[in-house]
Structures are given as C-alpha cells and as structure tokens.
Amino acid sequence: MTETPIERKEHDHSVVEELLNERRQLWSLYTALGNLRPFTADQSLKTRLREFCQVLVDYISLGHFEMYPRLTDVPERRARVQALANTLYPKFMEATDAAIEFNDQYEPLADSALVATLEPDLSTLGEALTTRFELEDQLISAMAD
Image (cartoon, rainbow, N blue to C red; front, side):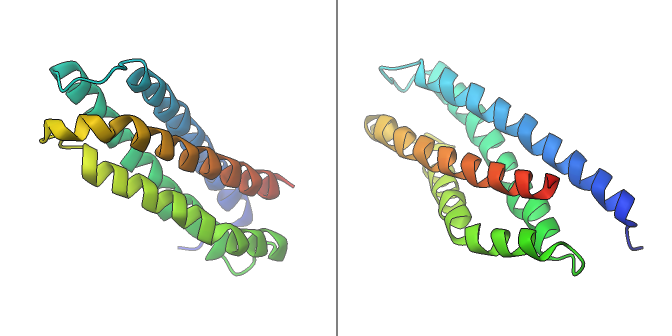
C-alpha cells in the first residue's frame, strides 16, 4: 500500500522524532560513560558500555535503515532533498562505520586490555557522532522546508 503525501509527511515526522529521541538518549549515555574516567574493567563500566552500545546500534540502524531510505527511495520526494541526501551519504556512512566498528570492539568488553584504548576510541566516536548529528540536522531542515 502506497502512502499518501499526508501519511508520508506524518511518518517522516514520526521517524525524525524517534531519531532525535534516540540521539538524546545516546548522547546522555555517551556523557555518562565518559564520566566513568579513569576507566577500569569493572562491572559498572561493562554495564554502561553494553547499554551505550545497544542504543548506539539502535540509533545507527534507525538512521540508516529508516530515515535515510525515506529521503532517497521516494520518487516524488523533492529533488533538492534527494540531492542533499545523496551528497551527504558518504560522510553519513563514515559515521555509521565508526559506530559499528566501536560497537564490535567494545560491546563485549571481554578483554580488559581494551580499557586502555577506550578513551581515545570514545573520543573518535564522539567526533563521528557529532558529524552525523550535523548531517542529520541538515537533512531534517531540508525535509521541513
């Protein structure tokens, strides 16, 4: 069943709201994780890191599999929005790849030696997430115009 323009706009709004809520939750967990410095491989770090990685994957998936396709797969979508989405896609994927790599490395935190690399890797991820937030904001703004 094809969405009407009104249904599509309502669904777009719903996806954007969900994405922004996930982003807020992710950033809150990112900050809480950073507040555990200096990092030690204790249960508190493992619990926070696991929770952070779960929300990170949910957030990345929502943007990658829900929001982004809505911008590029709808033939009647405004050409300007599609062009912007296509232009930003490579940088969007860089942030996605950084998040997936971080998750794959740290979600299990099986090796306490990983604690030594957590701080710089968390910083690198924070930069990638900030870039992704900026890209998403550009897309959200273009959708609203």
